Image 1 (cartoon, rainbow, N blue to C red):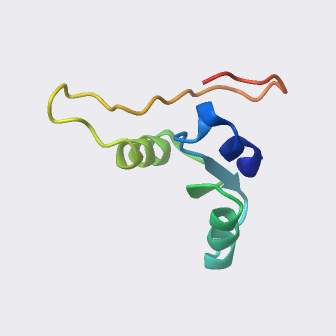
Image 2 (tube, rainbow, N blue to C red):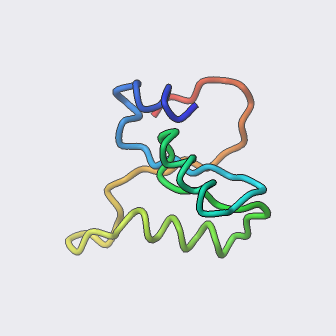
Length: 82
């Protein structure tokens, strides 16, 4: 999935986060090799996700907002346009 997203011009700047029941160093390496930016272990808490999104989308000093869009949603099998 990550490789397919990386081939889409509109998604090349997207931050991709994988979720897995495994969180060993080799699992993180495999996720990175597959094209994901990060791997979060399940069960993901709001605090874990909030901290990661803040780290991955630094805030601009000029406007106090991130220049990177984030879309949070549920996978429905439909394509999401960026």
